[in-house]
Amino acid sequence: MNTEQNRLGYYVGVCHNHTAQLSANLVLLMHGLAESRVHGQLGLYGDLGGGGPFHGNLATGSLSFTTCEPTIQLVIDWRGKFTGTELSGTYDATCDHPDALSHGLQYQQGHWASRLARSLDDPDPSRMHLVSVFDQGRRDGPFTLEDFARFVRARRWPLSAVVALDDLTTWGSLADFLAFLESQAPQMGQPPQPSFARDVARDTGRLVVSSVLATLVLAAFGINTNGN
Image (cartoon, rainbow, N blue to C red; front, side, top):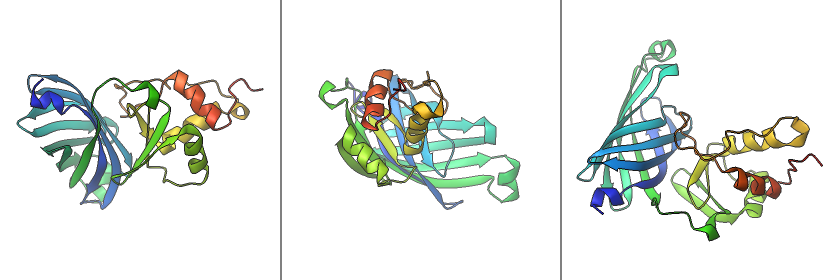
């Protein structure tokens, strides 16, 4: 296996927008490589948009790719370099939305930094039910589902923190996670969400958990999906 193939996996870190003075947690998944063409998914959790699926170029220790968010007329060109297991770089964004134009934010710049959290190896079954939380480049955990539920109730993390389950193969913001829990609570009278399954191609940039693990998560939070 060549060096670039070894770089594929899940990178977690933080993204800073210098122009707007905003930041977000970042999850970058690279899961396909053909020659120098790389395919992946970018998730941004916090005050910045522009995540989603991407394809770009991965060669000689450098990565470049483009993401876009048509709803706000945003295009971002990303550039990064590898140093060991770290991947960091800069980006240039162009936003033609009227709100951005009126605030002088048509052209924006920033930097991002991340570290490899796991490779693309198959998940370890013994770690499938552990939870890690990432925020501002720091990792907390892993925790059992029961401990994770206790810390969530104690508001240990901000809503923009990133939750990782399934041996770090399933990702989403804490806000998304809590929204799922609310949707499943019997008193809400809402049916289970069929989208709560692993899917690396969602345009939101989220990676969400399987229905089997969802049942265990709900149990840890004391939510009975049978309504009994």
